[in-house]
Structure formats: C-alpha cells, structure tokens
Amino acid sequence: NMSMCIKGSFGFLLIALILECANAQTCPLPFSRVGNKCYHVSLQEANWHVADRSCRKLGAELMVLDNQEDKLLTTTFLKSMGLSFTQSWHHSVWAGINCLGNRRTFLLARNGETVPYLNWVPLEPKLCRT
Image 1 (cartoon, rainbow, N blue to C red):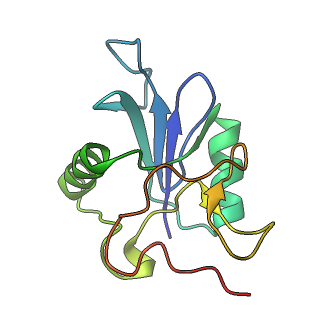
Image 2 (image 1 turned 60 degrees about the horizontal axis):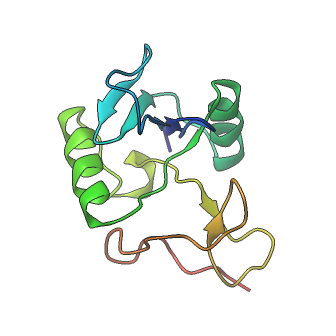
C-alpha cells in the first residue's frame, strides 16, 4: 500500500497524507486542500506501521474518513491522482485506524476512540481477526 497522511493540528495520513485544516484557507506544501483537510500522497509503498511513522514525522496522521461527504471528496481526490482505496489492496491507501489492541473493533490509531464512519467501500475496512 502507498501512504496518505492527513495533517492538522495533530497529524498526517500515509499513502495519501492528510492534514486537518479546519480553519486554514490554504494548506502548507506539499499538501493539497480537500474539503476541510489537507492531503499529501506518498507513492512509496509501505506497511501500516511504516506509513504511520512517516505521517507522524510530517506532523500528520493517516487518513480517517469522518462521514459520507468526506468519503466522496477523498475518493474524488484520489481518483484525480489515479489512485483509489476502493480497489485491490496493493493499489490502495492506509487509514488511521486499527484493531491491534482489542482484536475485535477498529479504533482510531491516534487516540483509541471509536471510528466515526466505517461505510468506506464493500468489505472495507475488513473485520478484525481474533
């Protein structure tokens, strides 16, 4: 997977890097504004842990979709770059969620809270394995 970071007052997204820019009119380079977020896409393939570390080094975090509108904006942005997280896993992006600590439910990687929106695409995110 590639990485996408989201950057805001707290972090980035890897394979596509995203930055929260709720109050900003523009995004810092190399980020692009998408809705109220700033995205930076890295085409370098990486596993989730490497992607997460790469985002954090940029002061950002891996992408998390907040709602249907966010999903549509992000999907359109990724498609404009020739990318998608709706196809095969090796042409996709990592998200800032995991089930590493509980093995049953996806939680936000940044703080362990409940993921706000999980209707990403059919069969994604995949169920955690026990």
